[in-house]
Every structure is written in C-alpha cells, then in structure tokens.
Image (cartoon, rainbow, N blue to C red; front, side):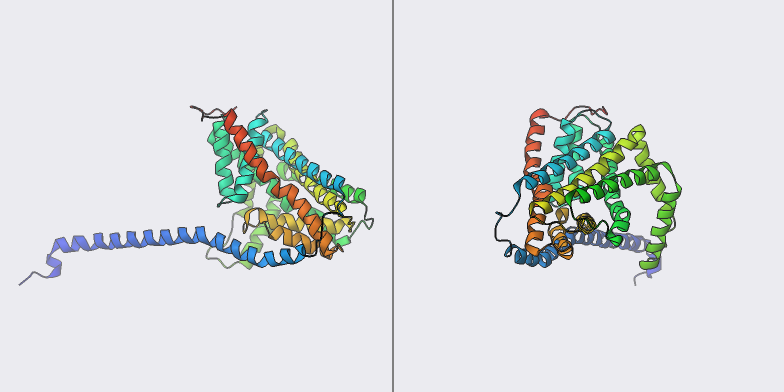
Length: 366
C-alpha cells in the first residue's frame, strides 16, 4: 500500500514547480498574443482607414480633369514654403542637439521622416533610424534620443496649440477679406501668438498646472479606469522642465523655429489654394489646416495618409472651394509636404552613408 500523498514530499515539491512552469507558459503565450495584436492591429486599422477614405479620394479624382488651370508660380511657391518649413525643423534639431553642423542634421531628419512614412512602426522606426544615424555621425545615443524626443514634443505641442490659439478667428470668421495677403497676415499673427504661448509655457508653472488639471479632469470624467489619474500636472511640469533643460538658453530660438515650421506649412496651403484660383475665407482655411494637422497626428496611417487628404478636401469644400479645386489644392500641398520628401530622404541617406561609411568607435556629444 502506497503512503498517503501528504507523506510523499517529492510530489509536494513537484506540484508548486509544475504550477509555476504552467503559469510561466501561459504568461509567455499571453505575451506573444499581445505582441501579435500590437503589431497587427495598427495595420488592420490603417487598412480599414484607407478603405474608407480611398473611395472618396478616387471619386474626387474623376472630377479633376487636368492640371492646365493651375497657376504654376504659386505651385512653385508652395514647394518653397514647404522647403522653408523643413529648414525651420533642421534649425530646431540643431538647437536641441547643441551642434553647429547642418549636414548630419538635415540628412538624418530627411531619411528618418521618409522611413517613418513607408516602413512599419511609424514614429518608432523613425526614432530608431535617426538615433542610429546621429550616433554614426558622432553624437551619443542618449543625447540623440533626448534631442529627437524634445524636437518632436515641441512640434507636436505647436500643432496642438494651433487650433486653440486660432479659435477666435475661426469662430468669429474674421477677416472677411479673401486676399492671400490677408490670409498671410492672419498666419503671421498666429506665429506671434505661438511664440508668446511657448514663452509662457517654458517660463511659468501655473499655465501648465491648469492645463494638467483640465486634462486630468477630462480623462477621469470620460474614460472608465481602475485607478484615477492624479499626477498629470506634475508629469507635464516634469516634461516641460526636461525640455527646458535640453534647450538651455536657446529656448526662445527653439520656439521660433517650431512656430516658423507651422507658419510656412500654413503658407504652403495658402499658395496651393491660390495655385488653383481659389480664395476662400482665411479663417476657414486656417480651420482646414488645423484639422489636417490634427489628423496627421493620429497614428492610423503613416503621416495621416488618406485621412489628411480626405479631411482637407472636406474642410475646403465647406469653406466654399469647389470639390475639383479642393482636390487640386490638396494634392499640390500634399505633394510638396508628403511625397517630395520621400525621394529626398533616399538621396539624403545615400549622401549620409557616403560621408559616414562606418560607425564611430566612441560616440561624442559634440
């Protein structure tokens, strides 16, 4: 007769071990499933998004008979404005990297931006590539990652602040004058407001705390969660302090560069509208622009592809632009801001590899 189970210590020792092994296997399977979901879900959502937006774009294409009615000098001005926007981004990157060099900054930014639009992973892929390239150029990986994060945060903050600062003009519908000069003046006023808002955000705490409390209340009131958000104001202040530390005494120039990029991008859309002969109300153009910028931040498709085009066409149509002209202006604008930088990124990568064929043995921070 076998001894009772409790008198067999070998089985008592094996059971907890077997349970731990089974639990470990379940955890591995669960982790693997979550990883697959995280990889497949964005692609699935992006595919659905393109499926929803594409018919609208194709139907509008049928109404755009030719390019013969475009005013080509304004098409060229659109490209020039977008180039100026990129120059502002490069200036911002030089500030956050604390370097005077232009070549590694320009080539790494163009390459990473293009890669983020065509390769899976979007922003993560872009960040990994730009950090790797800057390391090859002699900038340490931690410094490159911090600088890239700071630059991205400033550009995102400028984009998110844009609709808030533009709200009075959008609601009031002023000015009524539809001229390009009036619209450009509105953009210049917006540029000054962005500078002022950035200076306040980087030098005072109370606006950041108020924003944090408002966002915290909104999150707790609209999203059911197990633990309520309680420290968002402190998190925002910590992020602001990190940005200020990275920028050092050059924070004003950094704000000007980030705001300048937004201003020139807005002017590019105005030039594209003038290229098709459209002169809608400037405040409605500003509304269309802000909508497109917010849509571009949603990581459903790379660079908001499809969603930005669909949103811009719809908003410009609401602004009184005929659908054919709205499509033409959108395609001119997106060609300059989205498509032309793709081959530029490939050329930039080849030039970069030609100058920096091998990774440095020891990265520096200069």
